[in-house]
Length: 141
Image (cartoon, rainbow, N blue to C red; front, side, top):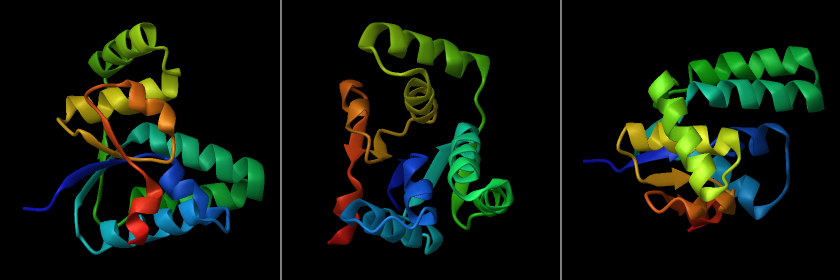
């Protein structure tokens, strides 16, 4: 059975912005593997907001809308709803571990689905003991 991973918003943002770095290349490779069905990939609906917001600010609203549409139909990607219980758990994570609210929502979303592996270049999430961060560069091997 394929490994289940939670995919953070930066995995989608870095390739779209055309960044030339090892982490952006790792993000591209991770997304190729999602599309190929090599692992079961989840992300929160919050990711749509973050991706559209950043792309719109950097590249323009039309590009943000286009990328948002693509994210919603990305092959192999499953979206998780953010419920009030997710936000309550995020509040607990944020309060006890000092994690930023959006990061806490992402972690709470993964935990609610029973996902412990979190693809991200954000080392800040490593404060959550139930989450194992999978660095983007790990997809380069």
